[in-house]
Amino acid sequence: MTRRDELCDAGLAVLAADGLRGLTHRAVDTEAGLPPGSCSNVFRSRAALLEGLATRVFERLTPGHDELETEAAAAPTRAQWVHLMQQLVRRVRAQPHLQLALLELRVESTRRPELVEPLTAVVHRAFEADVAFHERAGLPGGPDEIVLLHLAIGGLITDVLTLPDALPLDDVDAIIERLVDRLVFGG
Image 1 (cartoon, rainbow, N blue to C red):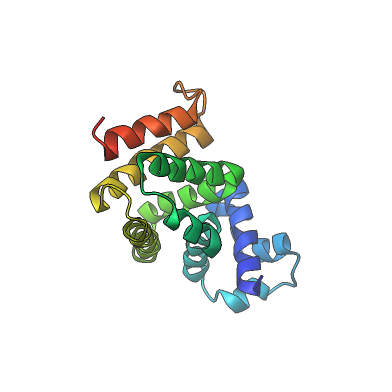
Image 2: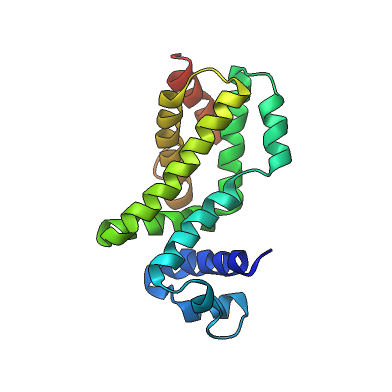
């Protein structure tokens, strides 16, 4: 793991636990167990740190190269679509602080216009990677369905992580299956 990744992982932990107000270069150094000044040497500004954190969220939630290649080689079916979406939600649920940190960044971008462009770029790169994987795997649907699933799965993840008892979310896998059926296959 690089020093940058180590600092980002520590920053994400601070951000998820303490919000933007608790996120300082010094707090990241402390969380990472590194000498003071380590974070500011890598991330010269708060904006650079926030962009680095957003990038790192997607790096951590994206499957590794070998797993992606295996998934891309699988039969491009409805079952594969469902499996991929269920795996995504499982990855997020296994590391909830990553999504919570991303939500903090998104909310902060509404107050700090200078964050909008870099955060938009990070999210758009993740979307483009999803579209490229989708095309390589030959899955049914296209970019429109991917947008719809991003929006639907993102809402599901937010509810599961923040207010899991507000809606009937007893069987998340079944909900994902219904979302894929309705949004990709029109069922």
